[in-house]
Amino acid sequence: MQFRTTVAIVSLAVSPTVLAEGFDNWEGEGELGVLVTSGNSEETDINSRLGLIHEVADWRNTGEFRSSFSESEDTTTTEKYKAELQTDYKFEGSQYVFLRGSYEDDRFSGYDFQSSLTAGYGNRLWQRGERSFLDLSAGGGYRFNKLEEPDNDGDRDEKEAIARLAGQFDYALSDSALFRQKLSTEVGLDENNTVTESETSLQATVVGNLSMKAAYRVQHVSDEPEGSEATDTQVSLSLLYGF
Image (cartoon, rainbow, N blue to C red):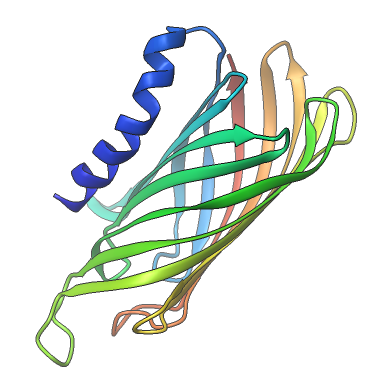
């Protein structure tokens, strides 16, 4: 229910722009590769990702959908799904306000699911050409997670207001190579549970729209569920197709 609510709210914000512009100004990329994980799951998995962006003069809408899965001796050892949607309203050039929703279902994290809804202000502090830029944003919102097992108080729900800080740095090393660094942290204002995520990646064009991508992802939860690891890491090597 929480996921459907989050997606519905963000979709309502995105829909007017999409309907007005049709399917023009859309770009995307599909990714498929091998993922080596450590933390709550230590496996070599198959991972997939779909990224979409729709940008016009006043609006920028982005979506990202990830999954990873593996089996060993007919037993599932990794199963994770994540969706993120964000809409930005741009004003005065590089500034924007945003609405963002996220949902994560990681079977081996100790959570049934994790979700958040945030809004705030961002600024593209630097840009060179179309592929090199630095975005920083700050905002606040609400987090709703459901634990797989009740906590010491017998409660499975984690609900709290959060503050969110995020940044993305893209740098075109050449016409065919791109370095990208993403960093975000969501700080709980009630339970003081902080979730920090970092992704460092390098991609290079192989031929046409096909690229090779190497990435390193880290997620740290300051107050992890009992029996779970606080830090998960992922190293991936994948093929990426842009469209």
